[in-house]
Amino acid sequence: MFTSLFTKKRPSGTSTRLPSSGLRDVVLRQLAPKGIPSLPGNARIMFELATNPQAEMKDILPLIKQDESMTARILKVANSAYFNRGKPVPNINDAVGIIGLQELCSLLSCASLADIFPSSSPIRATLWTHNTTTAIIARTIAQQYRSGDPATAFTAGLLHDIGKLLIIQKFPREYTALHESFLQKATSSTALEKNEFPFDHTDVGYFIGEKWKFPDAILNPIIRHHFEWENLSGDTLTRVVKLADLISHETTPEKISSDVREKRLSSLKKALSSFGIREDATTIISQMSNQVRDELDLYA
Image 1 (cartoon, rainbow, N blue to C red):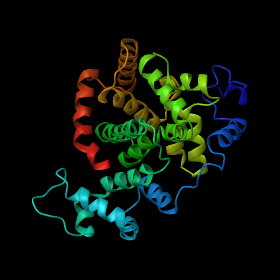
Image 2: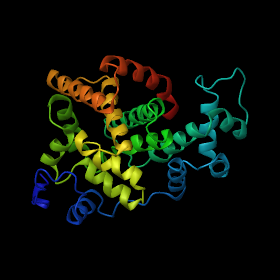
Image 3: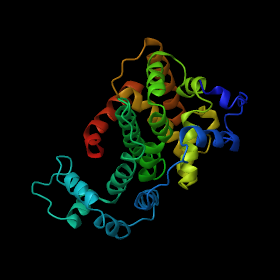
């Protein structure tokens, strides 16, 4: 449908290149006629704090107190069963003390992204759940295997498929149909997307992150999480997000074909081996499923 807009395909074997300026023009023209929207000021600050390992509570608390909805959200989380300490938490100072800096950064990231690129498509919620699940698992991997900063891993996992959120907003009917194909065909989502559009979600996500001035630590997982493992040597954060993405699909109940199931499990086993994790895939899926079940409601 859209391939005539950008007929020059990138040759196979050049997947490690960044998207071209010509492709950027197509994305801007077709997906966002008025341009990719600017990231709201408070959201930008929250993302910056969430991805800054040197951030301190004193940097974040004033921002929260300026936002009534954020204050209410954090109080709700602090009083949830997950953080319950046996008595009500009445004020924001006590709430952030109970939640802790790392969890607070995760909440800020989710709250900043949740309402961006809204869509009436029924799969919008599915995409958001996958992003959040990937974020939780990425942070857990970073913690358990000492693979980088856990808060940054959470944010990178949350944003890895941000391109899909813009595509579904602009082309809900076409992308909903594509999503059904993802569940039935043992073909990568990026390949299926390029059959329908002159771009895939990693291209779109990269251009969003570029406009919003995300650091390379976040841009790299967005554009590279579908690369083969051998092309990710030295890129620890992208490796964490790629593994989390694969596990996330296995922790979410989906009606998929046997071919897709077999391919996903094969990819996950390869990922675990590449990452040096000795536990079998079933054990890892079970462990991460429990972690996600405990935390997912916090970010709903």
